[in-house]
Image 1 (cartoon, each protein chain N blue to C red):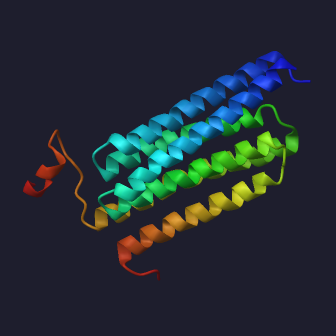
Image 2 (image 1 turned 90 degrees about the vertical axis):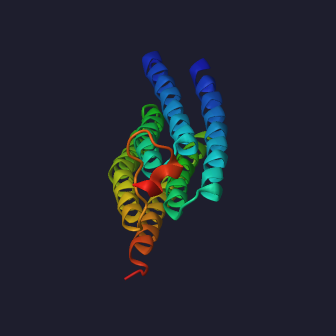
Image 3 (image 1 turned 120 degrees about the vertical axis):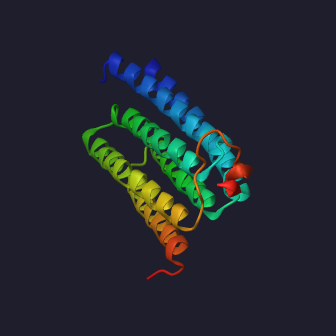
Length: 93
Length: 110
């Protein structure tokens, strides 16, 4: 069917675009003048990586990649919370 | 088989989601302050990821769609929470927000 081919091309191009966005966000993570700038950039890179994992799960038609995406979202959230707590208090207690 | 309207809605949702993700990246690169960057990235990122995952969920079977819906709910809950925690940490470490139309170098005069 023609729509499925269009969707396959659309998802591949979209995954490449999101990968370019990861590179541009990594500029902010490297340059960023303060520490919370880097935390913001790494938080958004986590979301982009989650989107790429789900797009790859659609392209290769592997369903269990979605579980990996869910675990990755959990780990990114816990990382962000931990680094923010460390910036605020100076210790992780 | 899926009908044609569902495919068209899926493609449109995907394109709009990629547009919002690009807006989030441009905001992250161009805006002058931590709080402005949080303001740009959190909302655009949540909406863009939700639209992309909705586009994937519209044309998949039920078990996959439930997992994608769980991912959408998880992103919608955790992304503003992370932004709130980052903003509170940035404010408590002494980064003052830009108020008015001043340049970033003029903040020490406040």
